[in-house]
Length: 384
Image (cartoon, rainbow, N blue to C red; front, side, top):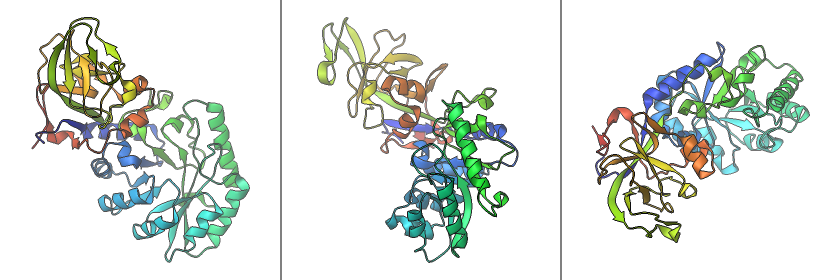
């Protein structure tokens, strides 16, 4: 891909490694539900989904029916669960692409009752998230009764969502207790035929193998960022799957007292050597990281100077030990040699979270599977 100024490399070997790490932390017989919503957390749905299928993952989760329809083209034979609510004009996508859906209310059921074919449903209980789900065990029971009585409804699962699994163990355990109690009150429930899921990546420390849960929804950990609070992951090292790179477009010298970029937020305290990089906030490098973030050039950290622009970013290379030149590789998420900048570090500089930084890499940045990408610190990627 000659001429590409900013690109993301997707390390499929890292993804395979992370899948193995997650599976190693799960109890035998627990279903891995791989979350690939938001274009696989910004990594590229097609690249990620194909590799997950090759690794034997057979339940994938998305945010909307439209995402599910896109995924069905890639994955014709797997279970696809839509985690978000279904709008009336999305029902046709659910039916045509055989998507499984979440039910939170009687209003949801009323929509699905208009379907002319069977619909696979997951009843959701709100145990403390305050977002989707039936509000309490009584309303969950009402949904359950209605689903069992309808000839075209197939009960495929029951679920909930933890609000603060990486921060509040007391709340998480209480949510699980409410969930279990609500299910126990459902007459004739046979959990062995259903996918029962409550845990996300952060909730795995509280996974109860003796309970009814037999599935976990894992997103961020698959992409190399497990919650640091999860003790199950302490003995393994996850690997970031995405790295993002640009190139040095121009090297220039400015005298002491010069201002840099929009708003003149920086006035140089010394004669300086600067590199103008072919990346900006339109690529996903956040404005909020201006004058705070760093990038890697030839394995050395170079601080951002001034406001990050739409298509360009200026960094200070005055103290760089090497000879930086036009065309050099500039990494704003990833590694060069032994030095790394990950999504969590970038998020700290931006006052954000790692989820947002990964999803924020824009659509104009091509995703390239790593086995097709060959580059050095002095070159751009080339597709073979």
